[in-house]
Amino acid sequence: MMTSQSVDKQLVLPKYPQPFSVISEHWQGQLNVTEKADDDLFSFGSIYDENLFKQIHKHLELDTHDRFAYVGCSKGSYAEKIKEKFCLLQPIANIFPGVIFYEETSNQRLLPFKIDHIGAEQYFRELSEGLTEDKEPPFDKIILHGAFEHFTNPKETFRHIMKTLTKEGKLLIIHRPAPMSTLPFFTEANKRFVKEDSNDPYLKILRCLQSQRVDVKWDVEVLPIVMPKVKWLAMLNQKFPPQMEIISTFEIMTGVRELTEGMFKYQGDQVEFFDRLMFVTVSRPYGNDSYPNIQRYGTSDLRPYPAGLSDLRYSLAVTPDIQKHMQGNRKTPQQNNIFRR
Image (cartoon, rainbow, N blue to C red; front, side):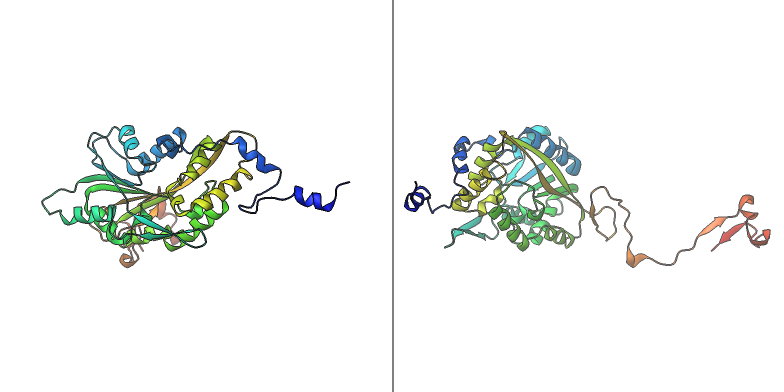
């Protein structure tokens, strides 16, 4: 017969970190999560890349002869992939978005601090200030890939960026809004991302662009991802995607355990999920009017201008077929048979 004392000894568990379950903790050993960081680790795979290139072609219309600039983090950068995929003949400008310093707090969290006017902000400010009226802007197409959160003054930065674009040039902003994210992050990471996004919501991008009086088309696209479970866990350990930089090492450790004992516990080595990205295409207003517009991608370019609406006069030629339906079948007094309203 087993005594209560012996039972207590058998159920003694480590208090830190707290296990999710007694039996299933052993299952984690089946996942060999590598810590090796290479270029392939910071990639969502070929299926994802091909779909991303299709969206870039759809929204940016990148041409072989375009002078192109890519603004994005070095970890998981698409600069060289885009150059190879679209066979760009001109040298590309690969620009670092900015610097965010992370300070660890007493509760084992990281607090971000943006460094003003570093990276892309400084680059485009100096480049735009050096342009003169007789000097052609240096870029035809620009991509901002996950770079908006690095800007301390986005309105001013967008103004400088648009100055560096040619008259027919385009800017494409690729942004992953936290409230729309469908990536399999752990619970604490999702909470932190949504909280941080509330300070710089994705609608702020559209408002900042609207203040610059540019034409904007935007849409949310869904890109499929297929990869091994261990690769996704290894990516999280290496703080990728880039928004994972705000998560501390302790939070990642407990979060990975949550995934391995939750959605990643079931049979199968592969995992399939989707990435929802916001694509914002920016260009100079067409024509000489002073009415820039912001609209969903694919909608009509016809824009009603409330300030310019007035009473309109319509006329319709009265043909014999219409004449017989008029009241009393009487002829109109106008000699040219015009019915006016």
